[in-house]
Image (tube, rainbow over all chains, first blue to last red):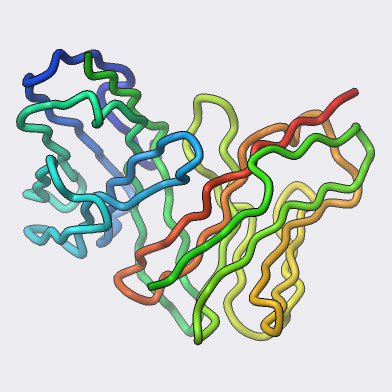
Length: 117
Length: 113
């Protein structure tokens, strides 16, 4: 049981290049999330998905696209990378949101450190 | 809009001393509240969560947090710090709208021998 995995772990891009970050979970979770972490700003939600084939915008969606073609995978794409997208990206997943009044936790992957020069 | 504020971006304590990390949230209705820990170069791991009922919540590694509605606070404490507690700690609120969470800015805890 690997939990949540992210590929790649590190990447350096030049401005204008594109790339896709892959998140995979083996817990059969319905909900998946992409966050970015920047110093002093905590984690901010980029996009999320409430099930296979669905996606929705989070707090900071501009410059990113996502797809959830399979339940276990959630892809984050950067079509034309900018230096402002230099960050650490985390994927998370959650089974149910609330069960008998108790919220489920989100399980996080190890992160992808992206540098855009 | 909901917001979460963590007072103090850096907290430094001696080994064996009390750890107190502060978190305040803004909301007219108390949300679900969480504390996560992030060790260097790792993802976030849940320490504890507040749902409803008991206001003192116990988590892993000896940490606990007290929900105070009147102060809109959810401070994290540990009676005696250990070197292995050195990490960054995040307070988060939400969970009712598609599980979305709002995170605080994070507090880096340093533990000195």
